[in-house]
Amino acid sequence: MGELRLMKGNEVIAEAAIRCGCDGYFGYPITPQSEVMETLMIRRPWDETGMVVLQAESEVASINMLYGGASTGKKVMTSSSSPGISLMAEGLSYLAGAELPCLVVNVQRAGPGLGTIQPSQADYFQAVKGCGHGDYKLIVLAPASVQEMNDFVDLGFELAFKYKNPAMILTDGVIGQMMEKVELADFKPRWTKEEIQANCGDWACTGKKDRKRHVSTSLELDSELMEQNNLRFQAKYKEIEENEVRYEMIDCEDADYIIVAFGSAARICQKSMQIAREQGIKVGMLRPITLFPFPTKTIEELAGKVKGFISVEMSAGQMVEDVKLAVNGKVPVEYFGRYGGVVPTPGEIVDAMKQKLIGG
Amino acid sequence: MDIKDIIKPENLVYDKTKVLTDNVMHYCPGCSHGVIHKILAEVIDEMGIQEETIGVSPVGCSVLAYNYLDIDWLEAAHGRAPALATGVVRLNPEKYVFTYQGDGDLASIGTAEIMHACNRGENIVVIFVNNAIYGMTGGQMAPTTLVGQVTATTPYGRELDLHGYPLKITELVAQLPGTSFVTRQSVQTPAAVRKTKKAIKKAFANVGQKKGTQFVEVVSTCSSGWKISPVASNKWMETNMFPFYPLGDIKDSEKETADKFKVQ
Image (tube, rainbow over all chains, first blue to last red; front, top):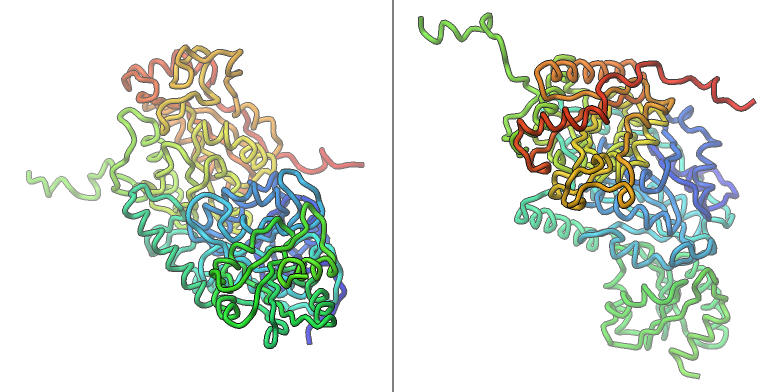
């Protein structure tokens, strides 16, 4: 059993970063996630593990500092909230195009624009469809508890390096701000020069010595070669879809209806399921843990067994499109959500389910 | 005497530095980039730091600089090179890290990144190539374009009321306590080339001594963008650019220490 603590989701991100051997954090303050960098600055990990923490002049600079660090084979991360992630979109596209690993945490707030600092899940499209320009994907993990905030930092780095691709933890102000019991991971040392050489030696810019020079770039002016690059990216995303789908199924065995929800919406829906089952409605829940890759096949299989789906989101209906694509018209797919920073209650989710899906 | 009797190591008077690759440069005839690349390559070679040097190339004509210097390179988004360099050097403080940026990249879209990298005193060399025009996109106005200078987006010459003032960014970064060596040079004559090489070598040596941000502006020509011959370009630069962007060291000191700035 690891060390148990009562911690805020945002604080756990910082602690998990230090413990998993992260080399550098570059960030810019924005509500509701400023505790991540604040916690790191209090912890002073540079004295402990050698991890660098730097407050950048903007989110634009933060993400590009990640590009710099990632190019040298280092484990680098940043965290921000929705408007800040929009500013990072350019950098994320370049990181994906240069096939560089990094971890980005989005503690979502409601938009559009400056919106509000209250929680939201309205950056789903931005996260899973690629928020910058060009054909690319982020690996997107959606924690539903403070424990998963801890677990997904290490997992995010693992997947980012395995596929040489940016990974994102897509969470929101609810999980970032709430306190829960968490079992912290044990300390893992940062990679040594030799380990970086072993893990990233064929691409990292560590100084040209006894080899061809390494260039971290997303540029390829020859369109035929650029198409080849894109084909390589697409093959990689397909491999990710085949190997890395993660989800949780709750009470789906006997279910007539399935709620699809992720993150904090999934937490609320667990209570809705309980209320519905007390009323004799057999409801199960599919909680996607990876939003890219999306559990399409699992939903497809469930579609042959149940009477309908409802996608519950703190957005105007984004993930519901992916659920519909997976169900492909076999059974009805409905949506319910509150947004603009409003968190739905378990009761109104049950009411919506009855009204939209079951009838009556 | 046979030619083989002449080609001997002891008779060698000039050899192309091994840090410069054999790739054919894409630069236009008369462009300053080729000379500045060669200077950089020679400095890296002479200092014996090829294995320890990491370059960051910009967006602009020198976006492909990584094809010409045989070192590890990162290619940045437009203007972001100083942020990339920060990420590299903070996590690899033993490396010699430099950015190579043009006037559009450094003084327009990347103003925030360069000011803050300099203000933090990032231990990097910044090579700033100022030819007062956007070369790659076809000769549009740059922040350093002179008043009255004709470009694709100032077809009647740069007008102050419409476009604002030419930006002396080098003088600005010299005000920042994180920079220690700030200089402005050029490469239009052999003497100027030697001075620029000396400045760049000093900048790299200072980084080796962890002296903070080293900023070397090279006032340059763009005969394609200016639409005059290379020879006329040199003349135009001397006549028009040097008075507004005077050559020489602007700052040569240690970066400032904390006591001057601390709260009581």
